[in-house]
Image (cartoon, rainbow, N blue to C red; front, side, top):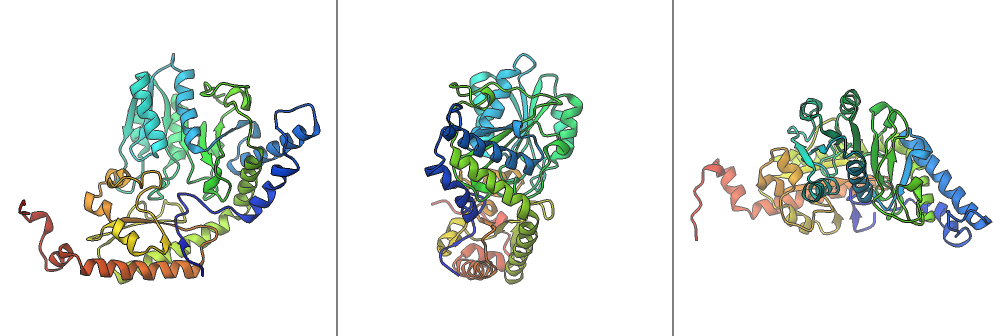
Length: 405
């Protein structure tokens, strides 16, 4: 076992050595531009890209022609929301999304509200962080042109009932976009079966390289059209111009192929490991709360709140373990997680939450060590906490009148 231990696989994953191996020739020998159609260097590069497109499409049950390459899921989300609004603005100006989406969707929706006058409905979630399909149905108006609901939450791992939402979208003739950044490669996703019309995902969450992502854009039943957000040479069927990063795309393809082959075994191993970690912690500590759905969740995610402990202090006390409180993209702020607040978790408990993200290369002994260290650190922090002492004495902290200084 080597230190530090990495348990933050939701924010990014280490690259699989087999992915790196597939990429290396495209940096040196096969360095051509995939758009150079008149010589062997260009043909080699294009061949690499098209093979990757097929590998990626196969993982999500799509057609290779429906894969549009982007710089990552944030760009894919922007392209989906802005591209649909611009292309279909004559049909309507209303989007339905949820309050627990990733910032890449929420901030894009807010920008569309502010700059384009688009109307956005932010649906609440239940105490497990799940969107109710009936809430989606009830929010639909004759101006609704897009529903954007994430496949699985990046903080709490809850998986949404996407297939049920897809059925409603189809009935009403509305497009469904799904930010599946955390779900692709971790659990089976079938865009046909689930009725998904647009889907964003990224290579670096599935043991591939950073800097490349994709947007799945349905080609038929219905044929989805989006307005490009970047103008240039008309690459990617005119939806996303720019010279393709061939080595990254080849790595993305290989990462998807490996996920397709190993996803079931990975998920089985990681969910056992995760449940053991959860059991170890709850057996040793009281006032520990699971955030997210107990069963409908990602196999590698565990998000726990430790009452009477500051999440940041807990992280500082376990410096040799890479963990996070909240999502990586918002961990620079000290606001309590908006995802946990949307579940109805109070500010104090939201501040005390830690997210464990296990991965393909996580070892049993690393998880056991992390459990032991968390228990030690929580115990030590609680011993120093006057609030914990008061609570143990049976004082209802909510009823305490604190003196102002």
